[in-house]
Picture (spheres, protein in one colour):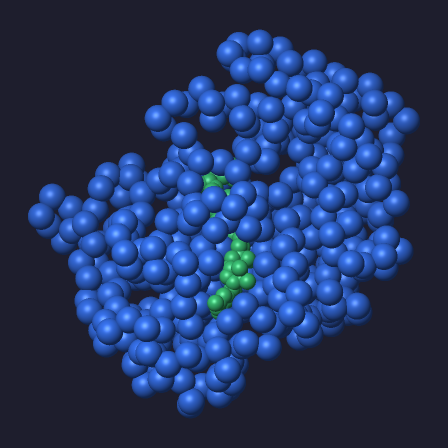
Length: 420
Ligand code: GDP
Ligand code: IMO
Ligand code: MG
């Protein structure tokens, strides 16, 4: 099996970017399969931090092919800004990165609609990143989308104008002011830049390379608990963030999937609205936020923090068919006398084993464990980790029935412990 999928098992920001960068040497191709610039994937090496939104996290490895797959929605303006922030020449990027002709575009109207929809929701806002994700996927499914391959058409400007008219007509129904020109200038500059890249039917390239023995890592965005079907709808994103999304978002058969690598934080975070049973609205939550620098990579918003939620983790593992677990940010948990982990839920006084489809409130049932105090960021061998952290890891392995084969102890590429 030459295709592995790496994805987040919580509400996003599990550390996917860091891990994809760290394991990229094991693969030939790194491909994003869903989401868009709502993602913010951070990675660090040589004391420099990079944040990627659309570009796969294998981009800093010169010999790897990076693909933006058909399931991704691309905002050309964000794409341009991002390419300029990487410290790589345009020629080098063009060599390393390929875009699917079938990937839908986020139009300026989508961003405005995203803001107008959120504005109209009053108290029930989703907490969207306002990058135009929902409206772009809406147009895709409604068969009104514009796709990357179309930017090369002579009549592209006419096509754009037709779409914009449609968006303006919808916006008439909303009491929302906006400045279209402000968005359009950067967007068309981005279109010109995109024209220099290879925009092809990437599904042929991927399947051809796989048949020749090349290895592909599919990089998930967001997290399983933000999936449009299985997350806490409507407080979700607009794509399938689960492992099945890799098949539709790249054009690969499920028969070709090997490992499903599930990433989770040692605790939980969530940005935006929606249920979060283990949330800590107290001093402990503040400690996790400050120590873990839990502020959004895309929007800078403070992330809500809480203890690890095992029922949610097990749900994600079930939906994704995870084969191996990776744990991140255990270094942030250093310093507590005791830590908690949610082992089940209660609803109406009764034990509850399922995640409710309608977001009805559940009460977490916690188990308390001894914490660890050591600074672990310099540790590179599993055996040297504090005993209480190893007990925590062992407990999660027992509960989930899966091995935790990687422990991340800091944001840098090097701060990673692989277990044989
Ligand atoms: P992603 O969206 O899943 O790629 O995650 P983000 O990049 O949005 O958020 C994860 C944050 O934690 C980033 O600032 C990373 O640099 C940082 N990070 C990743 N792994 C670790 C870790 O093991 N320890 C610490 N302290 N920080 C980490
Ligand atoms: P990465 O890939 C964390 C959240 C938003 C909001 C909801 C819908 O970095 O893990 P959207 O912009 O998709 O309409 O927002 O989903 N969200 C994320 N939260 N990490 C992300 O991506 C996210 N992408 C979207 O905060 O609650
Ligand atoms: Mg992120």
